[in-house]
Amino acid sequence: MHSNPAKNHSLVGPEAASERTLYPYVTGTSVVAIKYKDGILMAADMGGSYGSTLRYKSVERLKLIGKHSLLGASGEMSDFQEILRNLDELILYDNMWDDGNSLGPKEVHSYLTRMMYNRRNKFDPLWNSLVLGGVKNGQKYLGMVSMIGVNFEDDHVATGFGNHLARPILRDEWHENLTFEEGVKLLEKCMRVLLYRDRSAVNKLQIAKITEVGVTISQPYSLKTFWGYSAFHNPTVGAEGSW
Amino acid sequence: MFRNQYDTDVTTWSPAGRLFQVEYAMEAVKQGSAAIGLRSKTHVVLACVNKANSELSSHQKKIFKVDDHIGVAIAGLTADGRVLSRYMRSECINHSFTYESPLPVGRLVVQLADKAQVCTQRSWKRPFGVGLLVGGLDESGAHLYYNCPSGNYFEYQAFAIGSRSQAAKTYLERRFGNFMDSSREDLIKDALIATRETLQGEKLRSSICTIAVVGVGEAFHILDQETVQQLIDTFELVGEEEPAAEPDAPAEEGGAAEQGGGAAEQGGGADQSAAADEGVAPMEI
Image 1: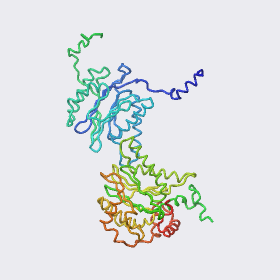
Image 2: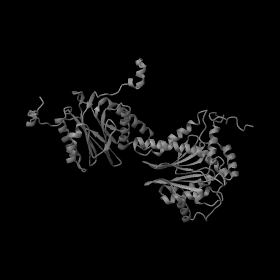
Image 3: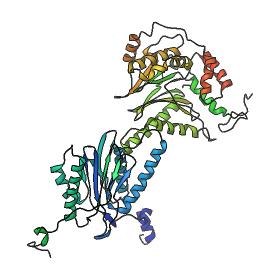
Image 4: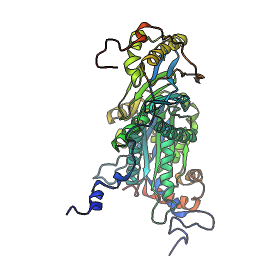
């Protein structure tokens, strides 16, 4: 009865033969983003890790979507490229209506949510955590989507390690009326902590700003670091079961 | 026996470059009871005349809510109108699901027009026998569109379709200059007066008309009958009954020309029969 392996195989369905992302290959680490007085600030480093190897060091993970939205991604970088391709088409078709209506950050965020959840329902997730920020009609918007479609809005968000290391700082220090300079300083503080404690973070980052006026994504730059703290000298001293 | 050699098939051209079946579908719109729409910067008001098919029956619904921000008024085959309304509702709800935001009115109308157009180019289909006045609100303000069985659509400041709609159009043409800055109440008043124009000697009562409103801070809704009667009473529209300004037949030619030309002969013929029927709207079954 079960002698025919091909028949057995077909019980699983033709989909069993298709390829899925079972685990990520090249990944980007945390994205941190905050609302500030005039809009949204977003920061991400430019590392692309191949497993635990820091394989690429100029990966742009902050991208402009349409006129009003900024997308930051951590996780599988090729999946991120696929998402960008999708969004490019979405924005193109939206522009082609040429009727004065345009997709704002809220709409793009919702669309991404549907896309991520739809793919996880096919057991073929896009292996990313996405941060979407933007300003439209004076309305600031900042939200997140996970690889399985979990989504929410907040005043400050961070993906991956950032969620553990940056958000406590943001909870303490963030307030609504941050100026641009204060916002950048706060993000740099977060990125510095991440650089120290997240092994896949690299010291080359970009900060992007989106306001009613438009978008600027900074040139890559580095943070000043100081590795001379005594805690850094022998971090595992006294820690049992470690080398 | 055949009046016309080229009118048995939707996809057959006449030598004069016309598609008679499509034009006949447009005639169906003219024979339906009237529907009226007008808009200001912030509001759209839709109105229609309800005609019962017989003394013993109730009338059919001619205004449909599509979504919180869009509604339609129809004239022609009500059954076709309901099919298109259902399509529009599902498009709106799908857009809301994906984007969590309302579908822009103009985009819905284009999709609707494309749907109507397909029927004019397939041998196994027939055009929809219904005209739709689509009123709605989006990012770019209030909009009123007329959607025709031919697949054409037009944006209007104010428009009327259906039997004896020329009388309403004449009224609206006289007044539309002020509509942009009209208040909601003034729009409703003008809608009621325009509706009255389409009645032939009949008194304007809330039982024979429906009014619907959509606007800034106001989701699309059909006013209930008591409210409409109150409005009719406060505007004192009942007493000042005036005879219809123009006879129907010559006036309708303007409407036919607007819908992409043609239909001049047919228009004339159909109008006479419509006049004979006294607006019973035989097609609206």
